[in-house]
Image 1 (cartoon, rainbow, N blue to C red):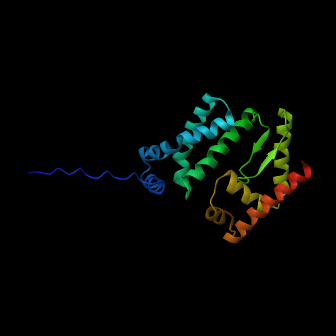
Image 2: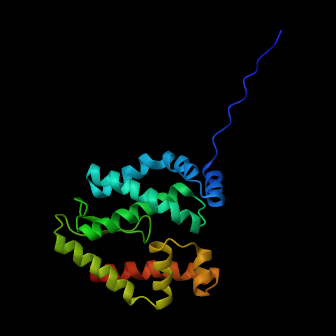
Image 3: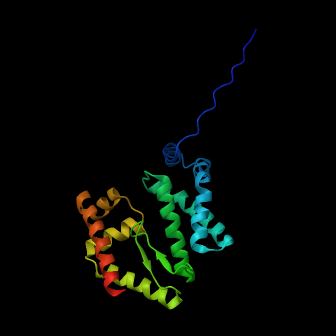
Length: 193
């Protein structure tokens, strides 16, 4: 009598494994498998900021297209967190370009996960543009090292190691410039706001 054994189902690869395989092969199927796990969350972030379903669908696809190149360049440790930040920053850039903002009157920045800046209870486009100008002015008031590290880390999504390589600063300096830069930017905004 023959016994047929079912071959055990292979456990799905974790995010780190899929990232590794994609970086090595560039296989879009691998990237698609990884992105599919988080696509609904990316869409949710986009919908939160962009408010329109069609715009959010477009942004979700644009973010996937960004991943094709970004993940070949960046060393990502926590994919879900990194992807959330990437999606949020993408939406904020879209809003800046199209000059439409959240109806709650809050602009969310990637300077710090918990840092947010109130604009007004009934935001007008001019108020929002004014606040964004304040943020830009605040960045320009920072010492050059702090400004450079903030731009590389939060806007260009560079890792600490990449910032060290690009600037010549050591790890402790980069960490210090980021912490002090965030604090000084917040102090500037509190003073001018």
